[in-house]
Length: 283
Image (cartoon, rainbow, N blue to C red; front, side):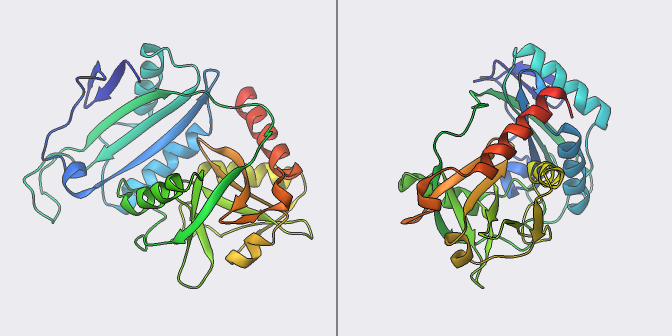
């Protein structure tokens, strides 16, 4: 657990950090967030995360309480205060404190909270894959906004945990895969096509996802952005998920079906190695 947190202009002990009971993030889930991975003191895709944070704010007509430069300064100071080398930085902005009313308050100041968490991140080769389950996607229609309204995601992740699985893959009413409860999903077909759902309002366009697209293109892999069915996923040569904390994680079993005979594929392994190298060299 981090020793210091940032709450609305103050660096506080994590134990004593708190927000007002009428903060709209607490009352309505009226806010957005980002998670930035730090490996050996180097942030992964920080610029992309902050750009997406601003996009989420804009989509909710929510202003940031600080400038982008100030946000970076807070992040760096929090890293130093907590002596964080490898872990995550959590950033949350809500519409702030106001009398409970569904409509937006006329006068409120956005709240900014930031915490860090130390993590042990596996930067080596993937020696074993993870398992996943499929669940219905029960979320709202604006999944492209990284809102703190995550109850359907939590229910999906809990269902996975109860079955001893790493991730829950959410399936839309038409039978196509949207994404994981906290990740984007990719498949590699038998013909070598790397397929992931196109970025629109149906999914959150992952920042790690974008980096993996770039790395895969540099490897001259054929990348196709389109929906794919559960049946296609089950028949794939490889299946993997990407996110800030998962980086690139191979799935070798989904529900009761082994993927690629339960072995971690070469493409997932290579993409993870390349991604970590990009972070370490600061690309």
